[in-house]
Amino acid sequence: MNKTLASFAFILICYFIYGFYVSQFELNFVPRKVKTTDFYYDYKLVMNIHSNLSIGSEPQGVIVSEAKLAKNNFILMTDLNPSPQTQFDDIYIQNIGVLVGAKYGYKDSRLIYYSTSTKTLGEHSGESQLLLSNLLTQNAEQNSNALVVLAHPYKSGFNWAGDLPKGLDGLEIVNLKSMSQRSWSYSKISTIWSLLLYPFNSTLALIRLFQEPTEELQLFDQMSQKRNFVAYEGAEASARAVPLADWLLKFPSYQRILSVASNHLLLTSELSGNIKEDRNKILAALKKGQLYICFDALGESKGFEAYLYEENSHKKYSIGSKTTNSKDLKLYFKLPSEPTSFYEVVLVKNGQRIDTLNTFEGVFNITSPGVYRIQVRISPRLPLPDAIKWLTWIYTNNFYITKN
Image 1: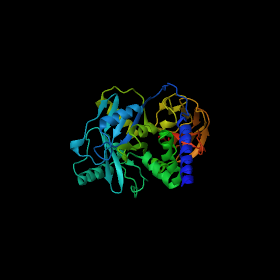
Image 2 (image 1 turned 90 degrees about the vertical axis):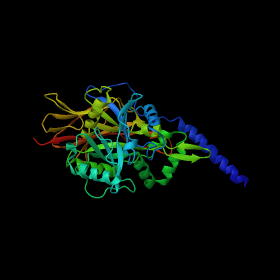
Image 3 (image 1 turned 30 degrees about the vertical axis):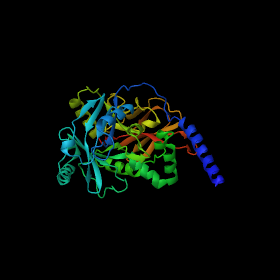
Image 4 (image 1 turned 120 degrees about the vertical axis):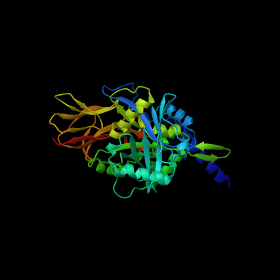
């Protein structure tokens, strides 16, 4: 008995010593520099967030405070199957733009819906299903005042079956809850280790769960070759309360989950601070794909830019743009600063990796029509037992190059 207690005490002491070591580890692999770009205004937006009106644990006001601590500019609330009586209008609170959307069950999947005109689709599930079906049968570009996004397409229990409808604007290639499920399937021991690390370094614990969204990227690239299609990040934030003794543990908290990753909207003009005007520009950027996805926990990305330009005319085309192929077309990128670990900037064409640069600023030559995007990958050294691990820091949306 004494040997058992001594062994348990030894393991517990080792755990707390390792926890102290891990708590000192910072994931800032990109030096922070206050930079802006010459072409874009960068606004952080996190979507797929639930409040206590549906499956979340906190009211909207608390979530806004948590989003401010996570340094977000906008949040898109997506409570599950909301009723019109519980819906709010878009508003600025504490300098955070709150956009009110919804999430609906549709067939075997979930769809995120946001509109600048109608907040909800109907009072009853049958009515919502009918209205969603009507939206999905129309071309996404025609529904200029509505955004429809397929949430977590490969999350367990919610797999989409069949072809994607033409009324869909895009899909979540990064969904943090789906990512944790994939980590559990890949390695249960590693996932349990992340849970043990969470009290000491919650950001590291969440980042350890990262698995490349291979299936989502494959589906995204396939659809992008057929029509304009957009990739999004979804937090799937609900901060479920876990009972522990006489108090409740919010795991993970809204602040933690909202600070891991986000959508960075790249607008070519500054927002006004008037929510009725700003939400139209934000919706247009979301539908066009004028954004990149960033794992902010790995480093500050503000100052990142990528755009097409014509060498002779110096005309620029933002992320999400479509233009015809020409001999002097280039794709320019710039990181906010040089990462502290080994990194690569990858050019992807039609879903295939075709070129790589290892500089924080550079130019790719565009020689033929196709659908192009950029991934920025870094290879930081994590605390033992992880050591070196490749992680994607940034996914841009597409540039569409058509034939003359």
